[in-house]
Figure (tube, one colour):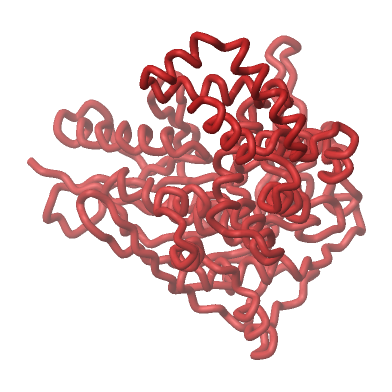
Length: 474
């Protein structure tokens, strides 16, 4: 018998704000010490009232527009009541009755074709704290740094029918939100609950639903879906277990899910409107401002870069990281050639970062300083080799490019007499390479050329060296 898998997703995305959703504490869960980013409001002290962060509303609406949602002009907050140690108020502020966005649509493409995934709603809510288990001391501690960090939860309709579709969807929204500066979508900033059921092909009613909670790794999500699909089919065909509606957790080490608890219903959470927060009213003027400030998409950037003559491969790398596009745009605005700048970014900057155990997405360089290095090389003030030395110092120590050149005598050597003496010395000390070159081995030329550049410590004008070498080796 053939079976049909039906999957719906609830994806929690941490918003990239400077402060939490209802207080002025720092917005990201990257604090140095436990509980050092907490105030009386987000730790649930009596008498403290929430104050709405306007930026959260704007980012949530922007995310909704990216996913082709309707932006609700009137939205409210509700209290979701449950007790858990990492929830200091014993309730979570979320949106049930009037969410900010509804009725969206996302197209995803897999090897099986293109699928349309309907977005039921996007709502704003606060995150909970984090439990830290100390097995050695047989103790569980609570870190409240993450409490009240702003989230959006994207709820889809049950439109997925394979793990491939789920992964393609999550990759797409991750790319959109990272490029649009909605969220970093890394280090737990994007977590997913997977609702899955299996039924015989052609059946009209959905099968028994299981929810797999709180997964952040795409590979884990894919494996969990495949395991649950096999578990459900096994239960239906061979009666290995009685399927019940429940919440399960994924164990990545064991490669399987385990039951956590029976699946709760809305009634279990006793939702009711939050009396401490006013409704969010998005008028025409505010909505137009949000639309006006919509970030450019990776696809739009790719089209723009094609006009610069940048290769498709390089465009793909550039548009994978918003920081690279921002740097390129500013350097080009300062008068540098786009293709040359891309070469500096993807070859030189990438190489320097790689030596330091970093990736391109971690590049931190002032566009003005990168433009300064490129301009000095293009104008012949320093050689390409010297330019790389300067760039390394800029990335690692944030030096001023021109000052670094002066301090280290990196200005290009154009003194013909000095260069000629170096060329004569290189010819004298590399007799084998000279003989090889004269016997037709053209690659030997670069060996002599390299000796000249080493003697001049990368500061010699390559054009003058090449011209003198060719003349003397005739």
